[in-house]
Length: 222
Ligand code: DX5
Ligand code: ZN
Image (tube, rainbow, N blue to C red; front, side, top):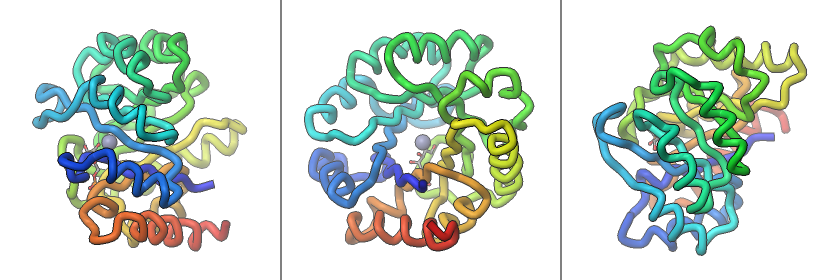
């Protein structure tokens, strides 16, 4: 089943509670929350306090995407704030296995993200421990960037491998997802589609969620 994960990075921050409510009403399963530290990526966003404020406004699963160096330092704070899931980047962690265990010990599901240039090889021996793999389809740091089509074969290879091993690990894609690319990533095997600008930069974010789902589901024949 395809899940849609609106990213609040492109939302109107002056009325964030309302914007989150809109996409929840639209049936989005997951809320994608981008945490940037100005080191791993050239931008700054939010911290655990924002997650805590939103927690009171939404029943959606909170999918925290950590684009920060030393992700292990922030696991407890995001767990306490009400996150359901944490994804950290393979490129930021020398002890990825330990970070995954730490996330799970705090009652959350764990994901690992790979930049477009990072091969799948690095997760070979930790795949069994992961609930999700996030394949970046742009270079992380900003919303509204152009989808990098070279990632499509990477989605296909991972999808095939997960099927062959009867794994329940999900593939999330993030960056440049719109009606056209939603169909392409769904066809390649993605399960969770993050969409920022394609939802919140639209006149009707509710309708936008429905349209993205329709485009993805049509191609999958669900
Ligand atoms: C980019 C973030 C994305 C971003 C996606 O580094 O990880 O989640 O919000 O935005 P769009 O969908 O606009 O590319
Ligand atoms: Zn993200």
